[in-house]
Image 1 (spheres, one colour):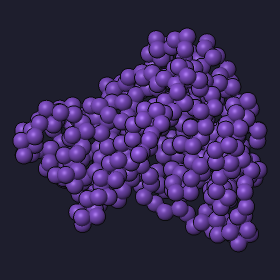
Image 2: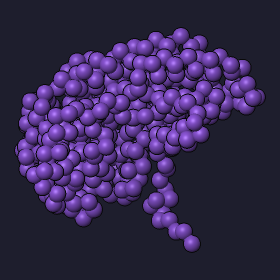
Image 3: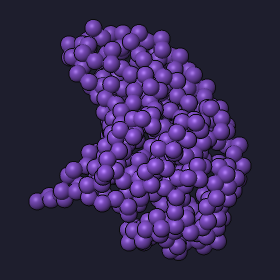
Image 4: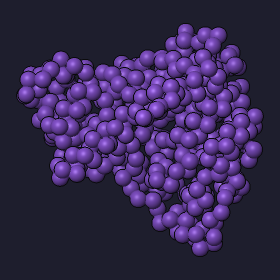
Length: 398
């Protein structure tokens, strides 16, 4: 008899992974599906990074690694923070994990207690609330919409704070909206959190280099709250290294020590070869992420222009990441050619998959059920074909 823990039973499955699976099933039937649900760059890892991994194999880096990461990788991370973000961290403040998701899980499981409240602006990355629930804490949502640029204000955050509030979690650039908080906006939030030193701020900066506004701004730059901030980042998006599974976090030494204690009992140190590859990535120049960002900017403009041509599609131009988070409220309640009434964005997303053969992800999993996320991390040709299919399918609704 199959038995599931109450802990696991309380979790929802990842909608992004579920849609990817549905797409693969159709592709297995030899149906031409254009996948706009994917959350990873479609570029291959640069050769100089792969060469570093090959060299690591030849040099026999095949044994257990230190729990917090190789010292030379930790040093490269410290130097990266100083060089690119003007942030000072010492090696005892860095923990390397198996991707940014692992870093986030370490943070939640190490620092949250049952009934702690965690503030999460919507839209949010699908795994935030589920990982928080796994830590037996309570996600508390602060709503934003396309009308507010998918960003929240200090006033909204202040109203949501209670005596149980322990943490605030956000991403900038954002997955799924592509929203980017400005320095002034972050400074306003920092002033609020400085008055609430009991609240930790988890800043997910994994899309740092896929930024169409220029310089990335981190909330950790404000000295009055730096000890409250936990920065989470990694090499997956900037260097197209999603499968290498190397993420990292920077925080106060006491927080880093807690995460090391947990990781030592769960995974120990992560993939040795991946760490050596990450050193090459972080110590190299930024030519590759700049090239990718230029390509994504071109694709973004194509995607936004095409979606805006569709009557009823409400689109905010994303300032970062590689997603358009479109408000599709106008299509809810319409009938498909088969006579089915589309009750929500999830059903609309399924309709686009089955009828247009375009995979997307509905906004329910991101906290904004009136939206659908379209990824433009695919070829220009695929984007143009997908837009034609989406327009034709939506025009068929009655």
